[in-house]
Image 1 (cartoon, helix red, strand yellow):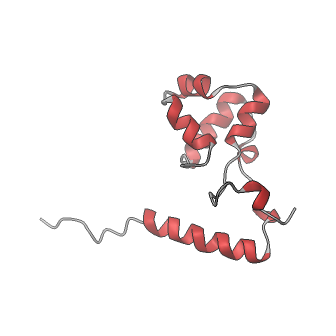
Image 2 (tube, rainbow, N blue to C red):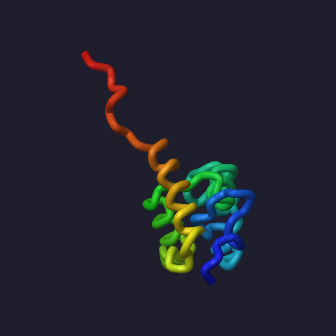
Image 3 (cartoon, rainbow, N blue to C red):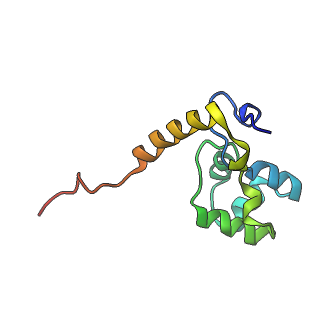
Length: 108
């Protein structure tokens, strides 16, 4: 399965499998939100890969619903060739946006 296109929706990078895991376990976004103390809309954004929760949050979810942490992610081993290069570029842009360099700190 070297083609990631089936795992992408409208050029959105699909990183997590939260929606699939919740469906397999019969857990609703509402129930998970209540258990973890988040808004249901936040869980929905995680499940649709609109935003990604921190790894520690995935670990909390895994422990809460008794699943292996690795079940929540697609396999990077299945991504090859041009698709891999494209994803690396896209992820570099995302990472750059999220960097905290300290350059904008206000000096006293």
